[in-house]
Amino acid sequence: MKSQNIYKSDSDGFFVKELRKEIFRMMHYSNSSHIGGCLSCIDILYALYFKVMDCDKIKAKSPDRDIFILSKGHNSAALYVTLAYAGFFPKEYLSKYYIDDGVLPGHLDMASVNGIECSSGSLGHGAGIGLGMAIAKDRDKNGGHVYVLMGDGECNEGSVWEAVMLAATLKQRNYTLIIDFNHLQGMGRDVIRQNNMAERFAAFGFKVTEVNGHDIGQLAPALRDSGGPRAVIAHTVKGCGVSFTEDKLEWHYKSPNDEQFEQAVRELG
Ligand SMILES: Cc1ncc(C[n+]2csc(CCOP(=O)(O)OP(=O)(O)O)c2C)c(N)n1
Image 1 (cartoon, rainbow, N blue to C red):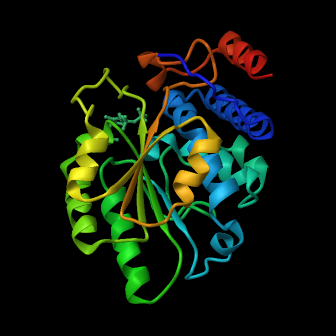
Image 2: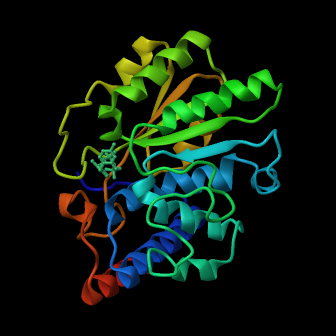
Image 3: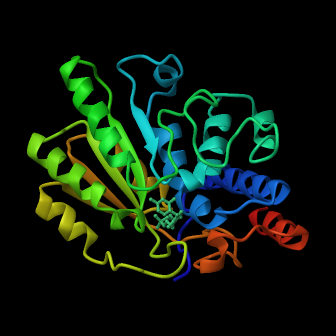
């Protein structure tokens, strides 16, 4: 499958192209990987930070803030560019990713820069951690919503479904799980099939919305719909936005060489 309608909204599409270019630049100079998953989820991150959440409250660490957890922490670069462009830390930090004496580690460390709410990288933990935060918000009578973004491969982890069962039991209304459903994992396609994802979340008692995960016009309202527990199944294309990375397994681990970097920049404009 190739991406379709990904730049539907002009100003948003233009902005997200810049974020995609930054991700490519970071992967190129640091000779690092996970570009496919970053390009898969970057529209979701843009929608959250630029259309849905109140970033001023997050920067101020208000108890009433929305909380976002990137549970698939291998896609840290996507969160870093989003945070930098949203003003959480200087854009210069993006030149200090995944290098010796750098500022931005390859997997997420909440002690590194402002805006990282949860350390992650070992898959399967964000759903449970986020649920704990959502429960704590209720108990402390604090506002704000908790969003957790996971990969479809990550949903192979049993711990995800433990959190889902508890969230449904508690009718946890301030809790949303977002699935970046691109069908590719690290070593194959649909390694453990997750085809009936929407039906399964619904059967557990979640409200489910399915969207094109590259269409900001669909993502933003689905994410703003706060009655939960909710699952937003975002249908995505891994490597989306650059012809030679789209839906290609090898770009989970590959790093772009000089020619590939230049071609990506040309394609993104
Ligand atoms: C517990 C755990 N097992 C294995 C890995 C290694 N690993 C890193 S990324 C990845 C594939 C993840 O696939 P998916 O969740 O679909 O992410 P995406 O395709 O969006 O990058 C794996 C197996 C890990 N980080 N944590």
